[in-house]
Image (cartoon, rainbow, N blue to C red; front, side, top):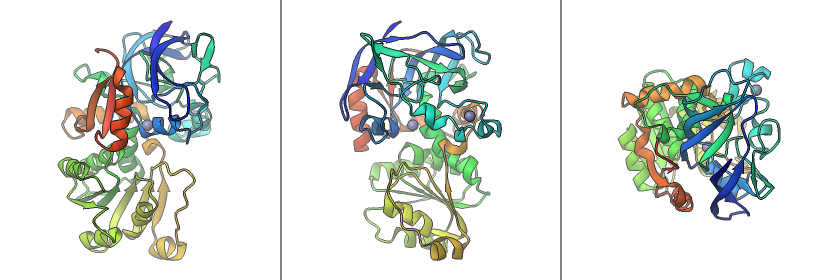
Length: 369
Ligand SMILES: [Zn+2]
Ligand SMILES: [Zn+2]
């Protein structure tokens, strides 16, 4: 079928809205009419080729919409279902079978292959094949995705077009707290970087009962939002020289947990040094090949601390995303406060506003629900 999609033709190039040919879904795949799609930092890193997806490509991996067609072998999803799209997982490798799909053996090989799960393309322009992203490519009017990447949303009273960011960025922040740290009630936590991922972590820290929640960022408007969403303290990283020292002061000796979403070397270092004895630091920022100096004796072993990586919030999307929707409906996870909507045609503006920090979480609106 023909549809409009945003194609990137060259490194750092603009998104060009144009007609693209989309193939039919294969046996385990479904065709989704995209209603909305979140703009994520990871899309920008593919466009600038930090993640080297072969160009031309169609990005977008936080889509949400309505199922219009299903392949012959699809079991869990039916035509008319409202779905949030998430990353591809195979469902049958040992890690998937252990209940932790974010560690799927086929996660990297498929999601970053520029192709779908059978390593063939679904998109083309005048016969030229176009790369996909996360086996999804939701910066488009339609997406073909594996049924494993579809999370059915049963709640009819939520705007499906807003929910796309739950499939990646917001799940990452909220899951880092709920699934990876599992803080006990009354714990203290520091969140470095108050973008979409960090603020999702702040909201979840409040849900799970952390009593001291500290947000660190350099943009005053984001720190204001952090306070509105649950931070008991905020630190402007530009104004405070010894951030870790300030946190030890606020918490009376150090925080129980810290989360780095910034991928900035000084902040990743502070995320360890701000912890109390037996504290845990979790990192989710995409830091490429940056090297963070960690003095094992003094920073980790001698303090009994834990340093943990976390992929996509360590979440099983099929259960965690409906949980986030429930919390949203109860007013306990008000992620819509982070979102500014843009018509699909304004995709380049949305990326600019995300980069400058003007908009915390842009969502592109392709169609009415
Ligand atoms: Zn797997
Ligand atoms: Zn993302």
